[in-house]
Amino acid sequence: MKQLRNTVIRAGLGAFYLTGVHHLLQPLFAGVGAIFMLHHVRPRRDAEFQPNRHLEVAPEFLRAMLVHLRSRGIDVITMDQAHRRLIEHNFSRRFACFTLDDGYRDNRDFALPVMREFDAPLTVYVTSDFAQGTGRLWWVALEMVIAKASAIEVAIGEVAVRLDASTPAAKQAAFYRLHDWLRCLPGEHDIGREIGALCARHGVDQAAICRELCMSWDELKPFADDPLVTIGAHTVTHCNLARQTDEVASHEMANGRVRIEEALQRPVIHLAYPYGDRTAAGAREFALARAAGFKTAVTTRPGMLFPESADHLTALPRVSLNGNYQDTRIFPVLTSGAATAMWNGFRRIAAA
Ligand SMILES: [Zn+2]
Image (cartoon, rainbow, N blue to C red; front, top):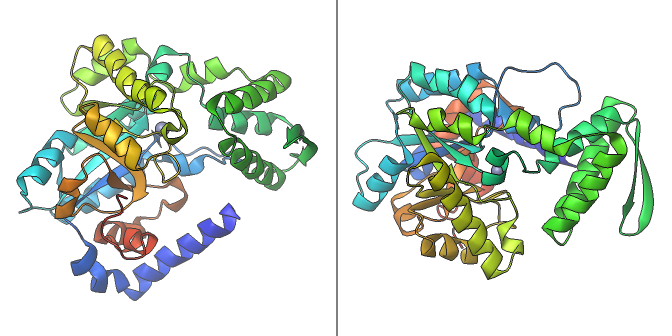
């Protein structure tokens, strides 16, 4: 199903580009700016089974995006500057922010050097348990379990299921099935228990995944000292905030921030909601982030920024630089806002 959706989206974006429809839509949907969302930035890998590939782009793709923005005269600015332009209604120039979620080491090794070529700032949202080395990146763990296995046995809703994982296509199908099942489990501890059991059975070490992929506090210190880098918060455990009680959700936001501030000795005023879609961040989370004192909070809802975004600073949309669409022909479509307008049914603000 996801495969089909990806194919349709890709075809749709291609059609936008080829017919030039985005030029017609541009005056309506260009907005005043955009916040780009990335996760990993690292060289392409060869493996056929890469179900999390949408979460990574190659350094060359990031560079091409920056070249495109420069050629369009779009300012690349910090989240602090974007916040200021929004509240001051300073829209004389269009702007873009680059934000990277989770705190991956490749952000330092591959993204920062490219950003430096353009003297362009970036914001990295750190999950404090990931920096601690104790976090659980269950979507990566699931990929590793399936990559190793030729078959997976699980109980889905008390029904024993055996999923074939003997070919790349079968692995892909098994991943989508299990990913959807895990994300729909009632609580965070349910995901933890099920993925923990799968990892134990297939010899995958979750703590090692965290330490291998994420920057530690000691690595974050010099990284955060770089004048181009802003560190934002991304909760303590990377939980789905909408599924937590008020107390837990507030604690996840506030303590994730305090732990970064203590470790890195700098104020943290920007937040990204884990998962960040409608099922993970809504009106209650937007209010909690505001009450916790965050100046901005970003979702994963697709959209450009408009003057009205100043009234929804803890519900800001982003434009995903999705690894499945690393085709430079989509840049004009992304910066025109046509693709995100299509997603939003042509509404300009989706902050409800
Ligand atoms: Zn995240």
